[in-house]
Image 1 (cartoon, rainbow, N blue to C red):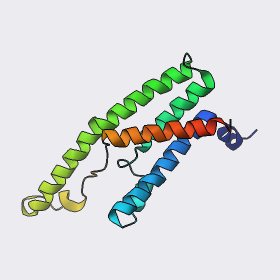
Image 2 (cartoon, rainbow, N blue to C red):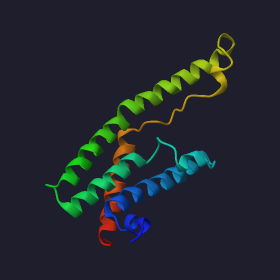
Image 3 (spheres, one colour):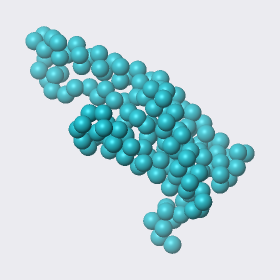
Length: 152
């Protein structure tokens, strides 16, 4: 059996990857609907609605629960990983995005006093998530893993 067949047959991997792909697609559609402009970066970028990080780890965790049970090593590790990722998305990464937005605003208002090299690139503002974005990603990941479970 080749590696691609093995990967496609891996319920945990496919649940996680499907969560990420669907979340990124939805994120792009939502961004397009709100801004009336297609932004290709949204297909792979972090931040925004829904959280692809949450969809990915919750898909993984749900698949581990369904395949191996709540007492398994696989579920325990993926559950802890999910909690860390979602906490980070709401906390540290969200604050980083707020700081980037503030710094970009300061840099754009006072360009004469700053080195031109500093102004070449704006800081990325979409790095974290609101609790609602994380919740939406989690629900998406869980739902997709449940749907894929019937295939496996």
